[in-house]
Length: 444
Image 1 (cartoon, rainbow, N blue to C red):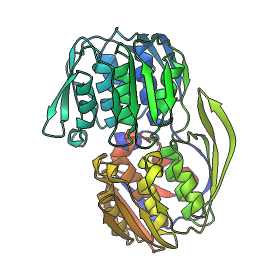
Image 2 (tube, rainbow, N blue to C red):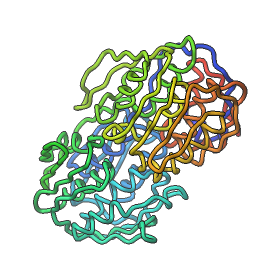
Image 3 (cartoon, rainbow, N blue to C red):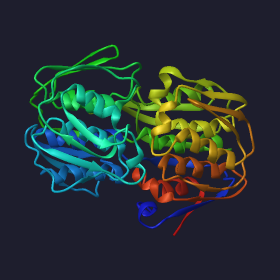
Image 4 (cartoon, helix red, strand yellow):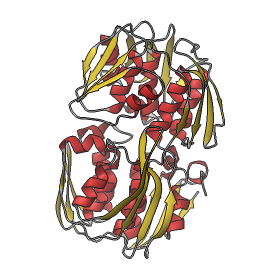
C-alpha cells in the first residue's frame, strides 16, 4: 500500500473502535533531515550518499528544485540517494520557476541558498503554500542586503530571490523557528564573515548539526548559533533516522487503543524534537525507550508504548518549538485524559499547512470532543467519548493523520476526505496502521 495515499486515495475510511494494536513498525526517514541532506549535499564538493531518505512529496520536490539548478541526483524514489555536489558556487540558474508543492521547509531553506547566487530565481508551490508567509525569511535576507519579492504584506509566494553577496549579520528571530534560523545560516555560508542567529527558545537543530558534519565552522552559545562564511563543504555519507513526527501518530494510537503494545524502531531522539515524549510521560503514558545510539551525529532509538490512562497537563513555553508538528496529535491524546489540558504559546500553528489551531479544534469537535480555541492555543476537556465523523483534511497531512488515529478510538465509521495530502510526509501511513491492527482503507 506504500505510496497509495498520494497516488490513488482521495479519502480514508476507518472503522472503530479498534481492538488492541500490537506489533512493531518502522517509519519513513526524518523529513527535516532529508531536506537538509539534499541541500547541503548539493552545496558540498563531491558525492553525498544518503540512506533512509524520505521519498515523500515534500522532500522529493526539494530534490527536484535542486536538480533544476544543475545538481545530479540518483535514486529518487528509493531509500538510497546519491547527490553529486557542485560546491557553494556551482549552482546554475534554474530553467523556469522552482515548484515546491506543499513544502514550506524546502521553500524557506532554498530562499537562504538562493541569497548567495549570482542569479535571480522564483519559487512557488501549491495553493496551501502560496498562502504561507515568507516575510519571516525576506526580513533577515533584506538585512543581509538581499532583495526578496513576494505578494502582499506577508510576502506570500510566488517569491523571487535576487541573489547577490549577503553581508554577515546578527539576527534575533521574533519566534523560535528552525526554518528561519536555517535560511539565515544557509545565506550566511555565502557571507564574508560570521553570521549569527539568536532565538527566543531553542528550535530543532538539524541544520547546525549537519553543517558541522559537512565541514562548516559552527559555534553554539546558548540560544545563539553562528556560522563562518565561505566554508569548504565536503560530501559525506548521511544516514537518516526514522521521523519522530511520523512515529508520534503510531505512538499515540498505541496509548489510546485499549490492550495495545506498539514499538517503533530506529526513531530520531534529538532532544529538540521529542518534547511530546516528555509531555506524554508527564500525563502518565507508559513509554519505554531502548537501544539508544548515535547515527551521523543524531541520537536514535526504539520507542515502545502500552495502553495508558492519561491525566491532563499544561503545555507551553520552550516545549512548543520542540513539538510544534505534534500539537494536533497531542490534542487528540488530551481528549482522553482526565481533566483540562491547556496548550499555549502555539500561535505559530496558525501559519502552517492549515491554521492548525482552528483545524485541530474543528476536527476534534466533529468527533464529539470538547475543544476551545485560544488566540495562541487550545483548551481540551477530557475524557470524552468520540464518535465516527466525516472529516475534511484541509489539505494538511498532520490533520488527516490525526483524524485517522481518532477514528481508531471512535465508535463507528470515520471518513477523511482530502487524504492524499498524507503522501507529503508518510506515504506508507495506511499500510503501517493496518499492519498494527487498524481497520483502515483507502477510497478513490
